[in-house]
Image 1: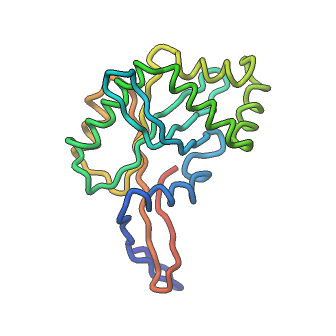
Image 2 (image 1 turned 180 degrees about the vertical axis):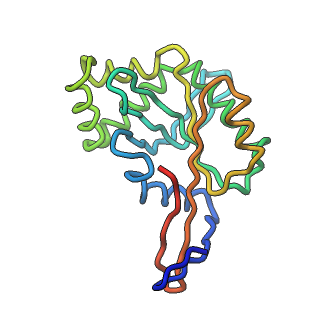
Image 3 (image 1 turned 135 degrees about the vertical axis):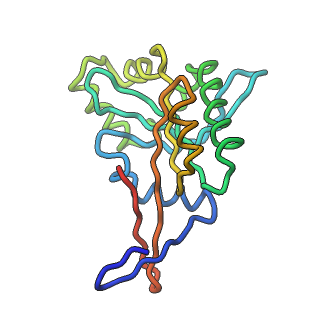
Length: 194
């Protein structure tokens, strides 16, 4: 429970992954910060005839003027088995990403074209950095050596899952926990560390 002298907020667990995704959209500016662009685009990646996967989205990190980066995003509920589902899925994303970097770039480019606001943010970043244009920026973040990074957004973090994600992969994995609370009058708040 979250308590104040004016209101009491009870935990309101997410019932479906779609509920978690709606919450992410609601808080995305504060969850990710002003230098990151969240693209909620679900498109298949991976080479034909090999393992293919559909990530829940992508996060373009423009915090650094010289080293922008990209995260493949997986949104998950704690109810999914942490090792058999989430960890395996992240590993499969990394394998699919390696075989289809050009496809990932195409997905990002199309998503930015579909969102004038997010494209403008990339163009403003390009204008103050060494990059020639948005295409050059996307090439750099997708095709650089060891470019695969994952971001898991989850409602409750299991200790075993955290250990596997942080210690067992040969690529970086970030974890964000997002929890939802509600008053008896239906007012919601979210708890997260940006």
